[in-house]
Length: 323
Image 1 (cartoon, one colour):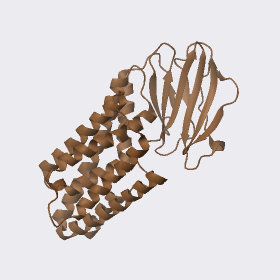
Image 2: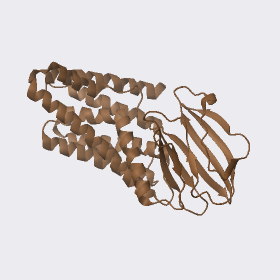
Image 3: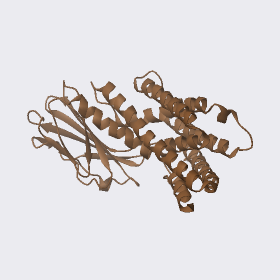
Image 4: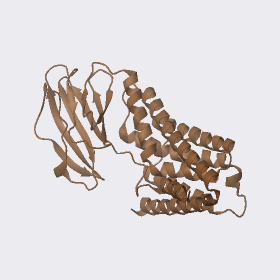
C-alpha cells in the first residue's frame, strides 16, 4: 500500500524544470506572388546549433532559389528559404525527416488567394500532402491534438490543477473549482487570440508560477480554514484568467490558419480541457485508491507532493524573473 502512496507522489511531482512553452517544430510555406514562395521554419533545440538544422523537403515542382539562411534564436534555430514553384502545388508533399519519438511539427501552407491549411507531421507520418482546399475537420483535429499535448506537457498548468485538487475536499467542490478554472482561462484565451486583451509573456509566466507557490503555501496551512479553502472556485477563476494568457501565448507562437480561426481556437481549447480532465481523473482515482487501501499514507503523500510542487514552482518564479 505504501508503494501506491509513493506512486501518487511521483505522479504529482515528476515534471521537467521548464514549463508552459509548447515548442513544436513549426513550418510556414507561404506564396507571396504567383509561383513565388517563402519557406520559414523553426527547429527547437536543447542547445542552439545551426549545424544540425533540418531542412524540410518541398514539393517536386518546386526548387530553392539559393541556399537556406539560418539564424539562432532562444532555444531554437530559425531557417528561411526562397522557393519557386512551377504550377499548382496541390497534390505535392512536404516532408520533414528526422522526427523521432513523440516529436511533431506543425506545417502551415498558405497559397495565394486561398485559405491557409495546417498539417501535423509526426515520426510515423513525416510528410503531408498539400490539398486544394483544407477541410474544417482537418484543422479541428490538428488543433485538438495540439491543445491536448500542450496541457499534458505544460507542467506549470498541470501543477496548478493538481495543487487545486489536493486543496479541495469533496466531489461537488472539485467540480465547481475545475469548472471555474476552465471558464476563466477560456475567456482569456479567446480575448487574447481575437485581440481584445494582452499581456507581456514573461511576466505572465512568472505570475503563473507564483500562483502555484500560493496554492502550495495554502496546502501547508492545515491548522485553520483559510478563505482559499472556503471559496476555492473563486481562487480557481481568478488564477484561471491568468493561466489563459499562458495558453494564448502558446497558441500565438503556433499561429492560427487564416479562414479557420474559430475552428482552430475551439479545437485548441477543447483539447486543453480534454487533457485537463485526464489529469483530474488520474489524480482523483489515485488519491481515492490510497485513501481506501492505506488511509494513513494519504497525509504523508499529500505533504510530500505539496513541498515538491512548491519548491518546483518557486524555482520557476526565480528563473522566469532573472533567467
